[in-house]
Length: 228
View 1 (cartoon, one colour):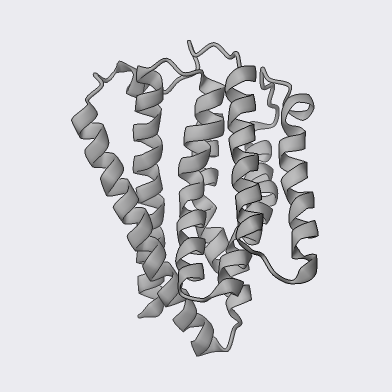
View 2: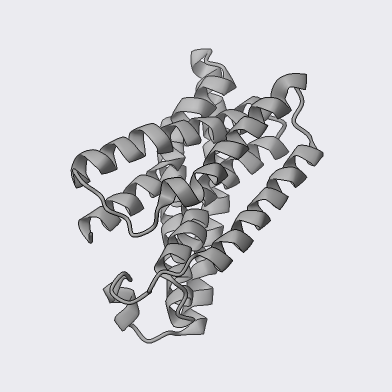
C-alpha cells in the first residue's frame, strides 16, 4: 500500500510542479521577460519545488537524513542522469549564452561552500541564510546580465493564449497544493518503505525520493530539446 501511496504522491508532486511552471511562464510572457531569465528563475524554481517541498517536509518531521539526502541526490541526478539523457538525445547543443564563462561560478561556489559547512557535522540557520543571500545575489546578477531576446524562443501555445490572471492564480494555487500535499505523503510513505525493508532514511532520500523529484527537470529539459 505504501508503494501505491508513494507513486501517487510523487505524481502529485510532478503535476503540481507542472502547473506552477506553465503558469509562471504565462506571467513571464505577459510581462515580456527574456527566455533565459524564465528558464533560470521561474522554470528552475518550479522544477525544484518537489525537492524543496519534500526536504522541508522531512526536516519539519525530524527526518534530517532524508531531507539532506534528497537535496544531494537531486543534484547528482540532475547533473548525471538529466544532463546525460538530454545530451544523448540532443546530440549537439549551441546555447546563445556562454554558460561556462558567465554562470559556472554560481554552480561551483555553492557546492564548495556546502562541503565547508558540513565539516562540523551541523547545518544550521546561518548556513541557510548564507545560501538565501547567495540566491538573491544570483537573481540580481541574472536580471542585470541576461540580455536574451524573447522572440522566437517561447512556448508558442502559451504565447498564443489570452492572459487571464484569475485562471493563472487558481492553477498556481492548485499546483502549490499538489506539491505540498504530495511532499507530505512522499515522506510518510517513503519512511514506511524504509522501515519495512530495513533501509536507512538516507538511502531512501538520496535515491528513491531524489530520483522522483528530479523527474520535472528531466521532462522539461526533454520538451525543450524537442522544441529546439
